[in-house]
View 1: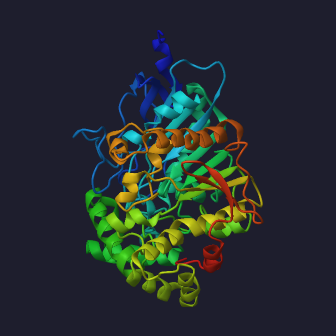
View 2: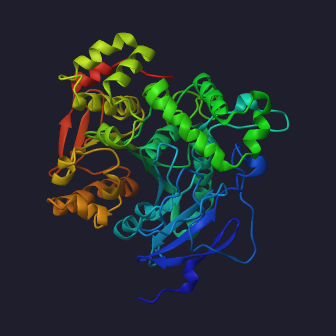
View 3: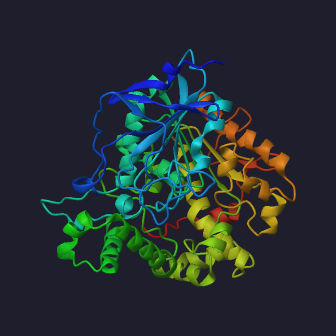
Length: 505
């Protein structure tokens, strides 16, 4: 089929952009949705992007946000550039321009708010566009100290600082979508926001941000950690710790934070997260949303339980063994007995006995891993579903499928292994390695069902007619596995044991 080259040139509110055809879809990359957050705009809320004359080349990804190591752009040694000037987004559309406007999917990447970018191969979304007939948008947002720390205590009249920059970036990108997506064939009145891990946490957080209302119309949160938003007091202590690591006196903080190389902030933040999560306050995430009383008025979990969340259809769920990945490759989660005991001692000592009693075999390694995953992902998601189901349609799932190789490696259905399944990316080298002992056909079939639930949400505002909504009485939960099934209230004893526990707030 011959493609009209003119269909690759689109007018945005800031100028013309020209994309390319890649993997059977039309794609525009590296479009700025905000001004570069550099110089005086570092640690400030995003500003509108500038305009340009002529046609802007939109064939290459924009720079990834500063982080410890720039992610690979392809499967080779070539890497995408890394720079503070990173607030860009990408749009993909079906090869043939549609007759009418199509649903829009907007993706927020994970990475503990410390790593990740929209340039990663899995996030390109071509299968979603081809199979689902949708418009797909991915975006970069600020991470680490530049996006998710609170330095307002060190503001001066000449160098003020804002807060929740990463979340504000996401709102700015959603505003850009509202203003421009129709030119790419997308329906600005049908936007589905989805994300995984930190991206899932961003989804649930944005559902409690007043300025994000009316910017998206459905939401899908994979493995969110809704409790990982904290008070200004806790964040102020972490900011002070970071300055200590940097060797910067408080009196010099405004100047230093504005002018020091981004790499220095990245390295100091890595040291901070190594100190806080595993050692000082196990179970917390020092690089995270701030409950600032304005942009994010109250803790998202409290907002959901009070029925104050954005009343849009919501699908959310977790993996069967969220904590297993972290126990093997990271110490972010409190997956050891020592860290679990310290966490309870520092948050809610009275909850300790009833919680561990719900995990027979504790303090075994496996039960400790289960506690850590349920603490950070599963139980907070239960609270979100319970509250949101009172104001809007809500669906809950648990992802149980693991290939024989995943089980042999001791992962099971663990954190992030569902991402390529959602994107239909089941033919990669990693996917082939994980199916060496079998499961290739099963995971492809599961991908069609899992991805299909997202596409159904985008097209019909529900994830499928065979998936009953969640409510506080029946707690219907879809189990994604070799054969999907609906269960009522999985792990009721664990849910009741965690009831009332809030961790660090």
